[in-house]
Image 1 (cartoon, rainbow, N blue to C red):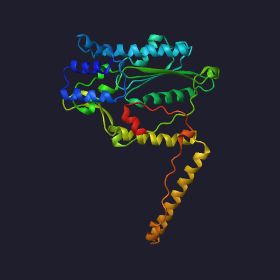
Image 2 (tube, helix red, strand yellow; image 1 turned 90 degrees about the vertical axis):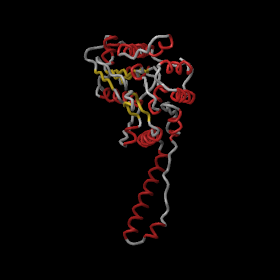
Image 3 (cartoon, rainbow, N blue to C red; image 1 turned 30 degrees about the vertical axis):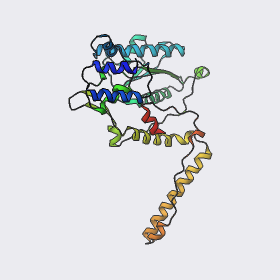
Image 4 (cartoon, rainbow, N blue to C red; image 1 turned 180 degrees about the horizontal axis):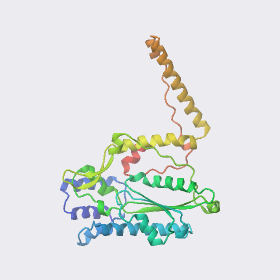
Length: 322
């Protein structure tokens, strides 16, 4: 659907006021999304004089349409039979039915009964990388005999369209789309020659601040309309987490020519800090204030990383990371 059709779908809901419609129009213009993006059938049908269907049945239909297609494509490209899959990890934050999405895939493709399956929910946009990390850890337990993992990442929009008028919740109606991705991981030596990529390192930093906890929050607005509230702090939180992640992965990817100045800078800052404390304890406050201030050395990560793939959760997030 195009931006114009999305706005028409919002108008057809019959619950948004004029200010909300104009706000969503401005968001779409700045979102960076194209004029041909996918929305679930249960919502798109309101363009054809049918009521919006947000039922469990319609949500399952969206999940099946997306997941079955990407799983079949991933298995075909990897030349892998479903019964050869040892580990299945699926992440979907806002739709967690019973039976699970993993059970749905296992039943559809006839996978083995002893397959290890994990369904991750409520973990937001970072769940894709968390799923890859989980699959990697599970495969490492099979390092001698080798194993294969299928990781599926998607989000189901059908039951989560927000029907209120609070701006913090309206962001989800314009930024999110239908879609998914699937990848096959293997730690078998026999698959090395045909693998597209080699997974070297995975790192994850969990922010524990109050603003990070509340920046993406599922709740009801004052009129009891359920939705996901996106805080203005999300750009700052994403930047801080990215900085911590880069610091963690730095020793793995940076050359010594970049690591040595970092260590030297930290050592000098520590020595100056300790010297300043000792001088103050001896009553030499003025001398302590004259000590030079050593700036942090910021390494050039482009010397150790060829490509950066930033999650495009809106242009503001990319601007914040830059």
